Image (cartoon, rainbow, N blue to C red):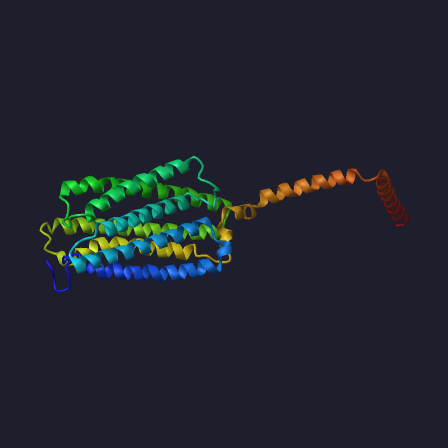
Length: 321
């Protein structure tokens, strides 16, 4: 059924404008980030490459969603191909974003060079989350635009919610350990960044929990979708929250001429504390002792005779006194 503004249903029409604005927002963020990336490309870290990938995926996701809604609005037919690509880019972006936050929380590249035995577990968790998220998005967006029944939706939403909760717990547990290591090693620059990162994540989690409560209240008090004019805000909020968190991460780990000081390779220089200095001093003293012992005995006799003469001089002065 065609509306005055097109074929989009009333509860979906505002999302077309929203996705267009989000595409511009990702474009602006990408321009700022890529300009810094190109300027300091010699100092780029692996983490910053991953952030670049997330920005690109977010830009593609919002652009595809906008064109999908624009095509639906113009023709009255929802393109299956564009929808599948859009939700796939979204699922990949969400998966990579969560894995990046997780490995950063573990201190990868900052306090540890590799994840060791945790690599396979992280990859398995990422693959599982991607499959669950992709399946949920496909069921909700491809084909019928009507909402799923409560039981059917719960069947697809529950795995994603459980995996999200598990990832959040793992992230904050890893962050606690990483902060302890940074504080013990007195890496103040990295510690400051990780504290800001932890605060941003904590705020994001609290806002998410509050919004989930509001979403449950909204749907419980509107069983017949009478408030369809504002229903688009529910899904739009999560895109705004993820974009805001991405902006915070970009600000904390922006490419600069000092980017490499946050890498793991610099920990050797920063960790040279009192113990390392004392051990080096001792080693140099031992080497110096070995070198002096190999010098000719003639020099030793000369130094001994010098000491004897100085002792005699002192004795003569004592006698005169």
